[in-house]
Length: 427
Ligand SMILES: [Zn+2]
Image (cartoon, rainbow, N blue to C red; front, side):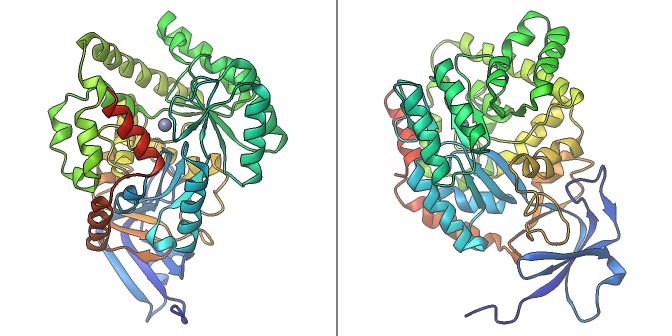
């Protein structure tokens, strides 16, 4: 019976960016009551006697959202330490991830908010045995979509081996139930996905034809085709960048690797793309440049973009890789504010959770990232984490470090670990 008396306090940073404004502002305080934001007010209007947490030289932002994760238990403290307070799992064993979502709801100050899709719904052959699910035909995938919606998943995710018929059927069932559907396309273009009613594309799959023909005209034509459908993009530039440059020595010296499970550090060292012909890696490196051009054009044309990372693929430190993704977006030409929106207000709107998270406004959950400097002016400041607040609780990094050390001593045998560790050892 703790919290008999609801705690109430004020946060006084130098700057606040509420997730929606076009710039940060100064002179504001945020008042938290329990797990909720009670008010955003002028700093001098904070009632006398209220406990005050001052953060000079700092900016407060909404807690970040990673829209593309394959969750494992060991990743939890890293997300929180990086200020990533909401994650969307886009491919996992259904029962396993539903149980994690339930634990997160029961014990929110120890977990990020979790949204989930259940397994990667695949075609006749499932690419990943544990986080994916094979379907012989259209009827089978329609039955899976229906059953997952009945189990209250937050969205549906399609995977690379689906047939056109299966993609059409899955999108139809999702639409009938009003459920959001996203796809990692293998065989189809973004336009074909839009035509059958897919709501979101991962990794910019199905877009490459546009920039291969003629960069500017091709991308404009692609945007013309996608805009009417409201198609959302989750580009995950950072996973492409890491896979393209797995041999980069700087990744191995990253101090943030201490948050990563040792079995994954070893798997990343042995990730297949490190070996073999250089030509494959160089091609991918060139593609990353084209993807950045594509993303900048999509932002310019008003295609909705949300941030995702694909953690735990190589050298994506859970949570911190969101900082890296935002930096990649700014490198592509987005302004820092537009990049930050992809991981806050825009992501929350797309995921239909904007009444709970993604902004700093009265009535929303008290999930914050407080950083040194001002990430709305200098995106690198997003990584200068000073304090994270989750569900009204000011988290202590030392406690998260201990949680991480404890989880990293356990064997990684959850569905995602089995798939990724198995994939590497099979090579
Ligand atoms: Zn993924």
